[in-house]
Length: 289
Image: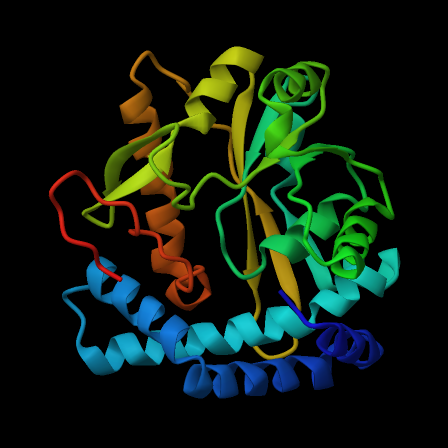
């Protein structure tokens, strides 16, 4: 969580053009790569598990590039929290609208994996579409207000906490509010099963399959890519998945991980490697971190 001094700095920097803000962010990421020893170790462990065929130098190169992309996204959060709607729409280009139109009028889940552009994409979406999302209140009340402001200042979404349970969420999806869903993190054993992610058993929540079934919803992946230099971002809607969900929840969950793997291979430096994706282990297996 950002300190209040850091929040003030992010606010000041959001007035800068992206041509200046982006390299500053990459510089911050390079500094974090050097100083954040524990998170660097997590990223390198994840990369070793997922890309064992690559050499150590290549994995370090990806990790360093990831920190740079993460640092850039961190500073650019000021645009999400305080920038104008028009600026966000200029920075984030939307592709694949035809896939969105193809399922218009149907309950939908927007599958959004954890890439560094995730929040930028989420803010771009609420400049045009009203949806539903899950929100976790922050301990710092100032930071909490800033996050809520950033997520509700355009087309006001419906926000639920994890404590609200699944019923109101399912009801909102059925009523036509797309759910911006981020189900690719290790949240422990509860509601999770072990399925492969890059060939490694990963505790993965089965919510995508279960929610799609309960709400009668189509799954429409949406991924936001950070573009090189100061070119902004591109948010891409992918075709809605056919034959999903099935009767096999494990197969559905493996399908989700396989889709994310394909996107990771397209931009390996942008997946959120700082998260302990393999923290929860099957019984008897040693810990990685």
